[in-house]
Image (cartoon, rainbow, N blue to C red; front, side):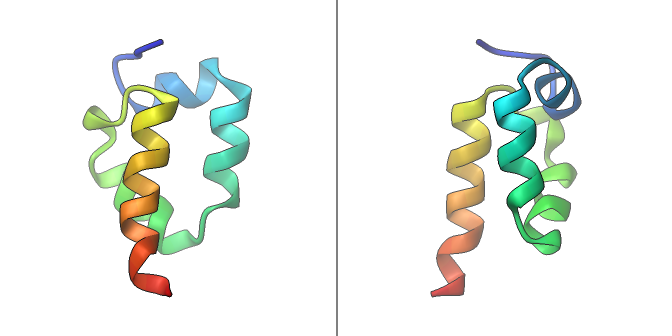
Amino acid sequence: MHYPDLNNLLRSEPEAKRYFDTLPDYAREQIQTRSGSVNSFASLRDYAENILRGDD
């Protein structure tokens, strides 16, 4: 399901909220700067994975 933005996604999908809350602070901050582009759990996961890829 797609939502208007990250905030609506996190309010509507508890699983997405739990996932978001497990991310490091810097990743959450980066995702929030593009909140209009993060409109589904899949897009949240994809964006987070791209950010975290540099942590290896």
